[in-house]
Length: 292
Image (cartoon, rainbow, N blue to C red; front, side):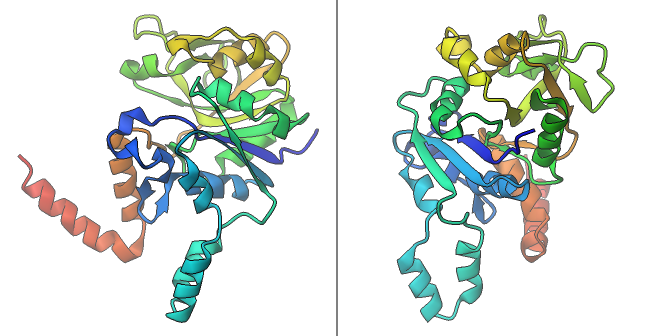
C-alpha cells in the first residue's frame, strides 16, 4: 500500500459561528492557551508521519500562511534580548521548507469542495484530511486511521458518539452489526438527519484518511445540505466501489468552531500546563463561587 504522506487542511471557511471575532481574524488563528488552533492540527499531522501539509485557504486567510513562516524581525528581536526559549517556541515546530502548499478555495462551497480543491497537489495517492476546529490533542488518532487504511485499502473516518440533539449538525454513520468494535465497516451515511430520523449517533470528528478515488465522486456530486458539496455524500456514493471504515474515538475532543468550544478547550489545556494551572484553578474557583 502507498504510504500516506500528505494531509489536507480545509481552512477557507468563514467562521460565522465565531463572529464578530472572525470578522478580521481567521478562526484558525484564535488561540488555545499559547498556540492558534491550526498549529495543534499541524503538529498532530507531523507526529503521525505526514510529510506534506496542504492548506486550502480563502480570502482573508493570509495570516495563516504567515504563521507557517519565520518572522525575521521577531527572530532578531528575541535573539538580541536573549529570549532564546521564546525564539525556539516560535520557530522549532515549523515544518521543514518545501513541505507546505497553499491552494485557494474561491468560494466557501463546503468541506467536499475544499478537499476537491487540493486534488492536483494530492495526486494519485491516499491522503489525510484534518479539520483544525476539531481539537484533538491526546493519543495518536491520525496514526491509527492511517494504519487502518493501510490494512483495509478503504476510506477511513474517525467517529464519536454525539448527543441526540446534535445529529442534525453531522453526517451520521450507520455501523451495521459491528457497533461494539473500534473499527467498523460502515453500512451507510445520513447527512445531517433530524433527531427523529437519525438511525445512530456516531458522527465524524474531523479526521479522515481517504483514497484518491474520492475526487471523482466529489467532482460529480450535486450540491447537498446547505447548498454545499458534502464530503459525507461523496463517501456514501463511493461505498459502492470503495469500502468505508470508521474508527471509534473516545478521548478528548473539543469543537473549536464555537465560542463554548474555544472556552472549554482553553480551560482544559490550560489546566494541563503546570505553569498556569494553579492560577487558572484559582480564577475558576473565584468565578464559580460568585456565579449567579
